[in-house]
Image (cartoon, rainbow, N blue to C red; front, side):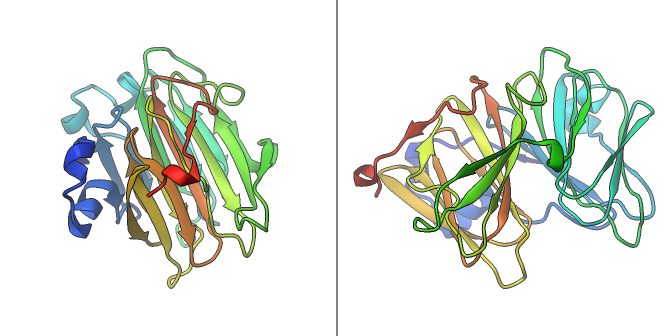
Length: 277
């Protein structure tokens, strides 16, 4: 578990590119045979990547969390981003996840293991975890059962489909929200004009990109923006005070995860284009 600390937006003004990447970009979550995680002091969110091969990987890190088990005071959302089928076992009950299927695991579950059904075609699990004070049941939501929301247009280069998995009208949770956005071919913007939500942080996982594709992710206060160049399967940790908008060299998919004070997907403060600098 790597630990990342929160950043003051005033100090952010002085960061160079290297400092930006070290604070906000997670570059190497997905390594075969490993579970890697990053603990952010933004709303205590943990992001992680697990690629089990010959043996299951257990969700645990007692040294960092100082608890008896991972979900003693937490909840977690897990999405398989690989064509290889995955299996998550929660206190003895197993759930198979195909690509883009989501599993929510609530507070109090003591043992969570992740494995690949076929080690030669490993699953690639992305997880997001937030602190929790109320228990909700463990539930799976396949992508075909998730309700798609269409946004954007070809004219604006942001024709996209949003699948909301964990939210107030979907899989119930204490404070974690999680979903996925797929951009249509020849569309590159994930959102523009951008927005902020100062009551919660957000993490972006960009994936379904080939080796030469890149996303230019914009962040910072609306009137003082920066950018980072992001590769496939890398994560941006976005502070509550920052915009989070990106444009790719071609279309891509991203998973968004949020946690904080408000539990409403539409809690956004939109930024007018004339205020964007």
